[in-house]
Amino acid sequence: MKVAVKVRLKKSILDPQGKAVNQALHQLGFDQISGVRVGKLIELEVADGQSKEDIQKIVEDASRKLLANTVIEDFEIEYPEAAK
Amino acid sequence: MKVAVKVRLKKSILDPQGKAVNQALHQLGFDQISGVRVGKLIELEVADGQSKEDIQKIVEDASRKLLANTVIEDFEIEYPEAAK
Image 1: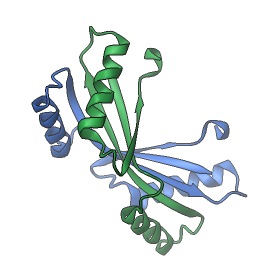
Image 2 (image 1 turned 180 degrees about the horizontal axis):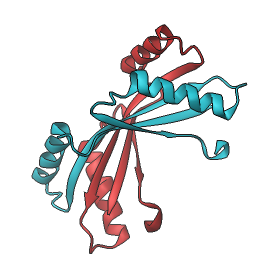
Image 3 (image 1 turned 30 degrees about the vertical axis):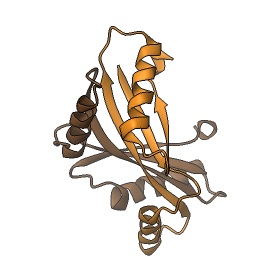
């Protein structure tokens, strides 16, 4: 099953990369755009033949242990439509 | 309006970061996970008071010119549910 993990900096954490992108966009004339935040989109494949609950447990565990730094980042897991 | 741009390496492009994450996950015992790809999740705010079409044009233009390197990356734009 294909699963996506969205990793975002917490709202209270400054995002210098997002700020740089925001400034670059303004220099290119995109004045309508603001508040740019840059996060990670991690897509992975979990072996089939396990219950939905097991897969959710595995991906949440992996996110907490490795994919996201939960001190400064939040993560959100997206399962394919059919698996919800 | 809040818009999200998902930027992914094209399928044909090697993803060393994804490979490193994949290996690290296996070392932690997550053997059920494979095919990790790491992309970017860019979230931004577009000023209201414009038509949906204008907003779509702005974000697509910004993605093509700055957010994604279209030689090696694909991008996908996600609008909030209500705006579709």
